[in-house]
Image (tube, rainbow, N blue to C red; front, side, top):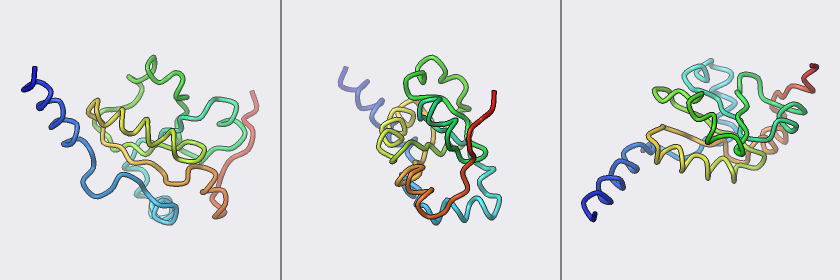
Length: 127
């Protein structure tokens, strides 16, 4: 049992990006401008209603409440940037996904911080 726990713990830490856990807002904006953002799968974990009101182009919406049912929609071989309202839920999801073998980063300060610096967000989705 002890060896199994050690192996799981080692695997967890191997999957966490060594350079950082989060991306600050200015770094994220530079990734957008340079096109390097295309190297990431972009995941918005806010609820559908919030996502429809304001969203960053390119992000896929899988609400945290549905994550366990839709985890297969997140590609395992790609780097993942996770966003939530303020970054707190994104950090929790990031830890969970890293434990499952994903390589994730969170957008620090979430979409609210991104809006505060004048980041580009879309409006309501018309259905």
